[in-house]
Length: 355
Figure 1 (tube, rainbow, N blue to C red):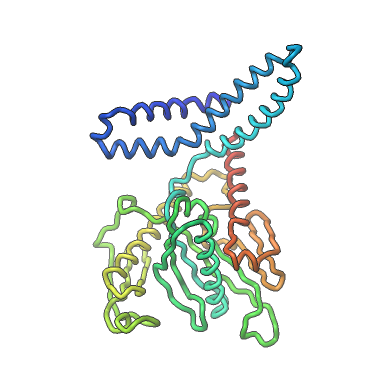
Figure 2: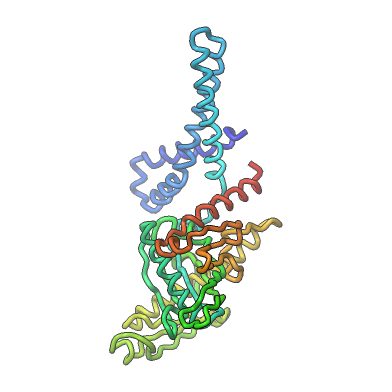
């Protein structure tokens, strides 16, 4: 019974309240921070559990009044409302009981890389960057460009953003994969539709304590920056290339004027990529026979098509098609796709959990 599963959460929440109200807790700041974080994580499930148990009690109370001559009709009406409330709370609680992705609250590195399609792919990478930047602003997230490599005719061959905000990874993790675009390039004189593609990689920002890198596994090269930039950018050895020898991962950063800042930014991206590999191995071990179709972040899978002539955007994982591509790209309205993806992912998880 669902009510039985909820009691341990309430007991632990009350226990944490007692521990945190003890004056001596201030003598151990690390433990106080740890307990406060645990209580904060239990806040939503504890609140929903209290409401649910109270609703069950109210249902029983009103059932007892059904045969009452004066209050029977009132109890009957109240029961309808309570049963509806009970169903809504059960759905909410089932979602809250699902195992939480440990990365959901983290900031996220979003990497957009032009794939097949040459200059047109780079131009679309630029369009996608602008749309994600607007999305970040809509959600109240902050973002900064970590590194970029501009395309020959505009856009980007590659650009990496760090997007900061509570729950950034929990939403943007659904964007990882291949994004295909179908449109008539500006240079196309015959009006033919071309198909290009970009890949998006989503990587949580990691703390230094979460991933260890042996300095002996790194080869760090410094060089003169190339491409656009101020005078000092192009005339000093400020660009940094870091190679992780065991995996062969190479990260280059030349956006800042300072070699130190470029090295720091490159190391952050390297840690995120190594953590991504580590997470893929963890998820592979935990994944059951029935693999979820969404939220895997697999950059090799084609997840979405942007068809400009038809003003159509289609997400292939959940067979969702919207004929408002222009509005979504112009306004960064990706929640119109991400919300259904989250709902689908939660429904899959609930079915697998057997609730």
